[in-house]
Image (cartoon, rainbow, N blue to C red; front, side, top):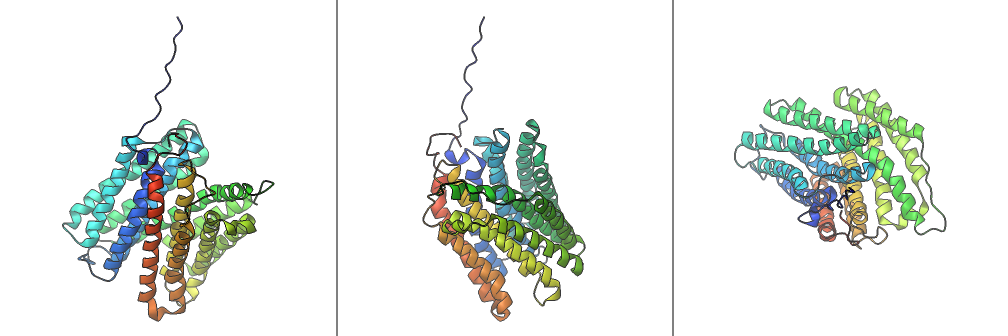
Amino acid sequence: MLHIQPPSQPPHAPHPILNLGFRIFFSGGALFAIVTMLLWSFVFTGKTALNATEINPFYWHAHEMLYGYAMAIVAGFLLTAVKTWTGVMMPYGYRLAGIFAFWAVARMCWMLIGLGVGSLDLWLAVAALADLLFMLCSAGAVIHAVIAVKQYKQMGIISKLVLLSIGNALCYWGIISADQDYQRIGVYLGLYLIMGIVLTIGRRVVPFFIERGLSHDSDKPVTVKNSNLLDSLSLLSFLIFMLADVFYPNPYLITITATMVALVNGVRLAGWHQPQLWQKPLLWSLFIAFLGMCLSFVLFAIQPWMNFAHSIPVHALALSGIGLMTVAMMARVSLGHTGRSIHAPPATVTAIFVLMVLAFVFRVVMPLIAIDQYMTWIMIAQTAWIACFTLFCVSYLPILAKPRTDGLFG
């Protein structure tokens, strides 16, 4: 007897925002970027009841920028991109909502800690559990898909996700044990591991985006230059720099390795440059983000020998490699994965990217020029960050919350 297999049930989510990871995590991450920066402006000026003897306010801010905002965007991207890379369906619907809920609970607890409301021990315990479950579920979904199709070339990203979980755990242990060294290591591991992911994914997608974006308006395909040698040098020099800056801050070693990272990625960026990209905000924003990272490593190289704070290159790297790079990626991915044209982005994208560039200028460049106006520059940078994500939310949340224009699931 012939057995006819019924067609498999197409995926279904209770709301379009739960169709794929990028929708809910980009939305939540962008809203959180506004809220947490507003709260940081109050914490920074001492206008909350946060007990600085229990938790260092600067590590509070750093933790939520990295393990809160940045990890939301990383999770949203990977829980979407891994489906494209492997063909394995990633979490959607209620399962995706559960992963997001763990992230959201942890963020709410950290906000209560920042406000100094209630018991630090209680909020810290709940946040630690929720963060652990969020990171384990996210990494688990990626690992499952990669192993299912034996795509072991993705193991580099998986290892970074595992190490990020360890870095986050070190932050929690540092607070529990009142040992700021653990907090510092956890924070800097978070920064550099996320930057490692940004450099890895950026190497894959930025050249592709440039070629695809410019070929659309050209009579012949546009190609950019890449080099396996540069890829290897970038990975090796960045790894040595990370280990040196976190565990063995020898000024000579930091200068040499940071210079190498800047040079290698500068040469790589020059190979990607096409004059036409300056006409397209979704492309020049990515290019400037990579350029900002290169400049950040130049600052790391000269910082041991110059009279400016280590936080300057740290914020340069964070604002270019995390701030501008993530908002540029979100602006591009949110269009492509909802069936909309990447060649017709919202009219606000230029203003969104310019505001993040201004945040970089006022947080990094102006303190180098006029340190006596430091508080003014910080407040302007915070305002530019908040305005950037407010404009992003106004422009993109309706896109992320609506079904695909072509009727497909995703």
